[in-house]
Image (cartoon, rainbow, N blue to C red; front, side, top):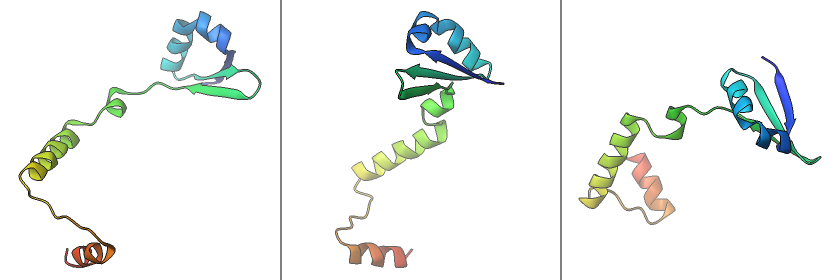
Length: 86
């Protein structure tokens, strides 16, 4: 697929068509003045949010923290010692 360039004014007027082209794989470059340009790129649902596994890991980490099940490291020496003991 190719590259489609448009002005911000034309993009604003014809957004639906430009979104559809982007969905089909076209690269849409929206120019704003002479120095600014933006690339319109579709983003998947997965890219917008954490996956199920990551969400579960975050919930587990939050619970461990609430339960006091964590190591507090206050200095570089403590960090170094912690990492050496892993």
